[in-house]
Amino acid sequence: MTEGDSPSRGLAHLLWELTRWVARLVRGEVVRRVGGPARARVIVMFAAVLALNGADSSTVGAVAPQLESALRIGTAKLGLLSAVSLLVGAVFTVPVGLLVDRTRRMPLLAVSILLWSVASLLSAFAGSYSSLLLTRLLLGAVAATAGPAIASLTGDYFPAAERGRIWSYILGGEVAGTAVGFIISGSLASLIDWRAAFVVLALPGFFLARELWRTVPEPLRGGQSYLEPGALDLDLAVARARARAQSASDWFTEEEEDQVAAERAAAAHEAARRAGAMPKPALVLREDPRRMSLPRAVRYVLSIPSNLMMIIGSSLGYFYFAGLTTFALQFVKGHYAASQAEAELVLALLVIASIIGTVLGGRLTDVMLRRGALKARAWVPGVCYIAAALFLIPGFVASNLGSALWLVMIGAGLLAAANPPVQAARLDIMPAGLWGRAESTRTVIRSLIQALAPLVFGGLTQLIAGFFPSQSPIGTHPSAPSASTTKGLQISFLILLGSLVAAGVLLIRARTDYPSDVATAAASEEQAQRFSARAPRPSVI
Image (cartoon, rainbow, N blue to C red; front, side, top):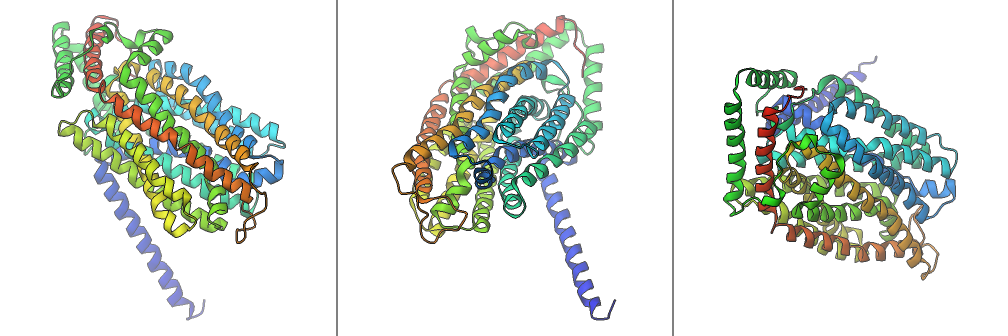
């Protein structure tokens, strides 16, 4: 090494140490905000699972130009590639929800992610459109576990008053994963091949499955494993909760257990009474929900008015998001005459806006809930959806990327802000013993509606494109879609914004029934705990 190398080496070392210091500072701030290392581990692991799901969902859209060229397919067939995994996932979600409510969830989730990664790896070796379609079918089957399992586990690890904020952190992983799927997969497809994108997507899943299996223990059901702020060791915190539950089962009399159950339910009832709400007698369960049959559980879940409206409303939001992510890269490159690098930068900024919206949406409704605004978890997401549509309209119409970017970023942030409150609200209005099946029922409906999005967006784009010239507009990047396809995408995006408005109206309407449905869930929980106190006790794990 020459003397001249020494300053360069010293500067590199200084930059490395500075990077490590910033990373430690950020990590420490994140841990502090979520309530300690134990909570941070659970949130990061769950966010990583949804990130993997988001990355998979966006990869087809990211490599769309390469797939169109290599497999000689159009936007309709591209839409089908995105839709089939969601459709198959919808079929498998219902039995998975039953397993989530009755078996250990962490091993189920870890094994599912392992199989998920294998299916993604197989996508890289598909030799034709039909074989790639088959691997997407397999992905849908094994991806069905994530939604119900994480919803149930989050309800058991975190109390209701914090769930909006906690969900905002977890769903932030889904948004970040969508960005990774777009940016990394799109770059790899451009620089190497579309197959490389699927290989890189598959690899993190093997490590994530191993970490989930080894480091995140199975919590007790019914909120007996809530992680208190400040907990340092996750295994120790869950073990202590298990010991407390076992001690209670050994020493409490039946009358004492009834009193504890009543006190827990009374607190939940009081939160709803402050909003002037009372339970609906016809919907109060008088049995242990964990022992309900699957058909009866599904009927009950769909009989709760605010739950049904929130399911359909949030599903319409996901419908638009799925169509947008499938074709966003093509639209940005064609409409704004952007290169691949510029399009990826735009998507990165949209992801940052979405993450900010996700965090603020969860925190805002938690604060409002603590101040007595119980209905906020229903109507705030509805307002966000309608406002998002209003900002996206001029963003899609503007031809200059600089002027459109801020409008689209605000729209993306509002679109993402709706998700955490709705997720938290669905746990509020459901007894804990039904969380898995309630989430699987919701996932089936959401997946069916979401699966239509790529098909509807792609088919409508092709239909509209037929009315416009097919040449590429002057000044566009060579890999950009044709002028007709770009115009078709623009008009499709604008027309289908109606789904966001409909979603907003439904969620605002749900605020009417939401307080009484919260009170009904609390009363059902009280009855379930009284019933289970006299029934043979299930295993604490």
